[in-house]
Image (cartoon, rainbow, N blue to C red; front, side, top):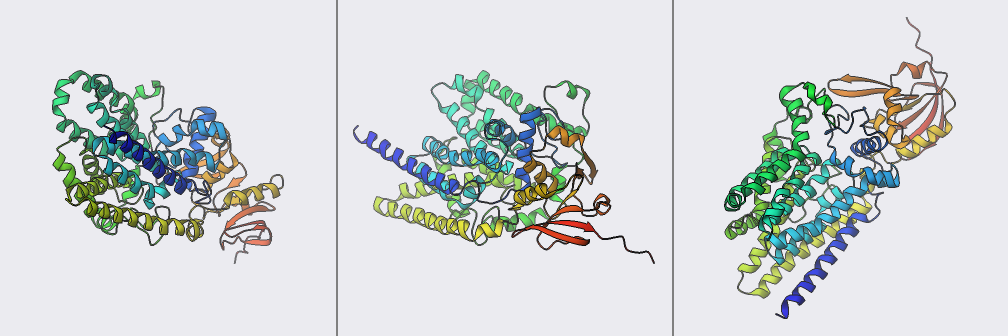
Length: 527
């Protein structure tokens, strides 16, 4: 009786220390690492700003269940969660990255809670420790790609589901057990393939509880449909009916009809089998700098063999809750047959792999008759993970910032500010086409009023993508006649980009960006 409080105290100290380490890895030089702003971050952040100021997205759709964004859509949950943050701190890199980093830190103790309840204490500590230092999770927590929050909501949903069915008050908690899994659908649309598998497999293994409490279970399904219904309606409109029924206009939210399919855009005739096989066998390496730095594995020392060991030990328990992570992994594997995988699209795979690895390590420890040997094995695994994470984080904070600076357009906000400061009345400004979604980044850093953008921009749809020719005096295509016909214009140029000028004056220059005043060259004489 005297040992239990000591064990609890030690475990509390341990998870607190692990969480502190997780926070340090995710908050060191935050929000300036990575420097700059990715176009997806700018888009999600500007949607938040638009919701906050006018209750619409940037195209004027009131409270949409999915953003049209650039034409094929963007997930909404991160932008909605960020509304109070942007309202408090204003639109900035800090405010758009704050929710993801807080969820990233929070996922570590949440995984501990889940594994402590569904498995055992060693698995909980190992799982939280591995997640805290896993390269993929560190990098994903530090920038605001909206799909990066899916793993947190799947983890929260799985934890809630298992807790509700094993609590002392199942009739009270089960009706709310699927709410967070329904919210996960809005974090990243691919959850539509993962969540039904998790719920279906779990309820099948928990059939006695389902039969004992049919009303609470039925209410949980109703709650799932209430929360997730608007997104299911969006899928019906865009992927089944391909039109908007009349009643849509009377809803308190909007269900936009898109000019193109995101799934069609990302598949684009790619060989899924070859691409995804390489992704898995290469250690989940997609080659993108925003996933992990070159030369590092997304999950560090965690691999399929250790996770397979966890599947084995979880199956031996015959516990539906311990096997929740296996069910989650099964649902996530389905994505490999649907989308070309990378560190973002397949992020639903990673936390169950980490959790099952922890269950495997714990099972290996418990299966050894010599506990000293078992502790030594666990210590070696964790020391290897920490050592790998140390090498990764050193690279991430030294060499990597220069490598990723281009991908995130670092310095564009300063270059745009310089152009605005030097601009004469009626002088147009060209923003480099070499900056992906250059109009989006411009709107973000200008904090342009969304209604003013809607009223004073020239937009057309090309191959399902919204192309913005200009917003007021900002032009986003280099062949714009309004530039060549002006007496002079400012150009925010990237890299070695050049303009055809009779005379050019360099106003500012930095590593990636140059701002020049260009007097256009006269048209070439016709032969």
